[in-house]
Image (cartoon, rainbow, N blue to C red; front, side, top):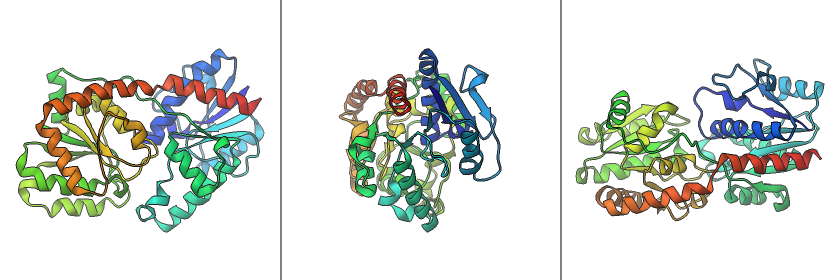
Length: 369
């Protein structure tokens, strides 16, 4: 089998959910494909910042200034047609007519169109419909996304395959106090602290986290650390923080994007991860926190119900009162935190990149046959 993969999202400098999925899945997939005597070609639009493949023979770097997928990658696939093309990040070249498999991660724009421009909603709607229909099989991260594809686009259940991602096995509890203090000093924060770890955008519900924290700040010593790059419509959040009383405002830290090498220490030092997102296609921060022995507060919605299982503190995303009450409980009840930590270590055993790669390769082999 000749397998072509769009690896462009796997080589971005600051990987978030979709980029992390592409990076880790491709790295796990390559040895399995090699063992099965398949030829794998990875297509990049820029030079990889870190080696994604042990062999340079896998990589083809084909830069192009605009519309790389639909023009440059499409031309390459026409010139060198594979048995199957796989995109781990939604998009199949419009003109490509060969066998294809796409992973579709998230249909959150249907639930929160206000978090996007009208043009983005139109593009996402068209693109998702095109990619779902063009794929011989569609891979999704969660049963929640499987249901969304069926509901919004009429894709049959037989065509959709749910394959849970894994998590970065390099993430583990950090007990070295020097390392914890080094990372805290780097991002100018002090323990104890609550941690939000994701892009700052409306769908992530950061505004309600800030409101909840402001209501209980005088009852606990924790800081609130908002760790992540600023996304779409972050400005109202910054204005909300700026309008808080100085006594609360000075205890809220915005760190910007967190380097991967610092993530384990940042998570390990937190009282809890506070992640009551309004909608997620998967929700990697939940597993990352649990892998580091950090309790998780998250929302009872979308894929977060599947990912969290029985190992998180669930709240309703729209309830500031529930978020604030849960934060107080996590700050004040060490036995409850320990219960969630133990349950979290058990929960993450359900998610493994090696298993995800095996299941993905089986789908690709079936489509190529």
